[in-house]
Length: 434
View 1 (cartoon, rainbow, N blue to C red):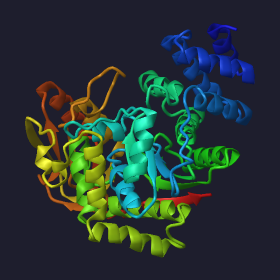
View 2: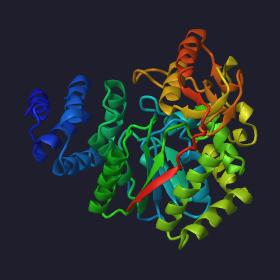
View 3: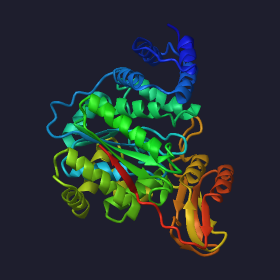
View 4: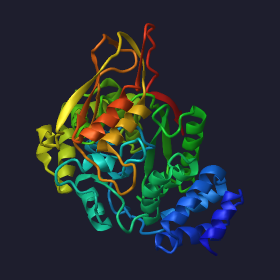
């Protein structure tokens, strides 16, 4: 076998055999198949897809490209959550702190930003000293000790996905449904989970803009979980506008802390409670959604969720003082406002455009080797349904590089639509897939 033949086969719409898929993943993991060859393969998959049999083998080959965790000795349900990517989506940070404080073990393996969307690892690394790199032994030990780990993939855990994740971001193939499904599920199945909750984004700022595509992706991942005897619940959630007010890295950590204090924006708090309720139900901590929400709210009210996040920060080398003093997070060189060109009702606050602007500021990557500037970002002041007056700030831009600032502000000026007729925002949770 050779990579070029397999690329041609998939380019021409042919089915890859299990042996061919396993060879390709193995050889890409060990470096025999190059990045540029796998980039060509991902583009072929983007256009030709993978049928269910191919996808099952592709996911299994990714899953077994390295070490698989064994959490069987740890007492308690191990439940994780994954989002398909959104703008301002910092949900994982307050969510897992609340769920872990409620008694569920959360072995979260997260990723970095993809395209216009932010990544949990990039946000966490805005905390001074915080490391997301843990070897499997340390990962398991921390999970047993404090019930919460917020880490990236180790060198030995699903290495094929670690390489592919960055490659997809730089090759224009992030939106491929089979590549999304296999990436998510290979990582999560490698965690030896008892259950998984998925946040499948749909809308302007999501990789799935059509609800039918999002529904199909959710069903694919739920079925992959069932095939591996892991119960999976997926919520389809709206990503037409950014979640919360902050789009950046340090600023999203700060907003996550607001949620943990009970002071977060309504949309961000609602989706956190919705996903958290499903995690508590899968973990048998609660018997219905109302009880689950009451338990989660209690972790906010008594401060245990905030304390749990501080524990995780300290355990992973970060400075836990940021919990009480967010000013210790990286700060920008300056801030400027984007004024409303007219008065009226906000009818569009485009998540995709705002995400691109944040990336241009340095909050995301245009190439996989690009560094992240944790201090920059966009604070959204006006969202769909809000009333604004002429000159009122629609957003505030935090910047460190003037050239990047100019590029970002030109983009941001196109992110809002203001009209005379009120348009209510869409609901946050659209559907459930079980």
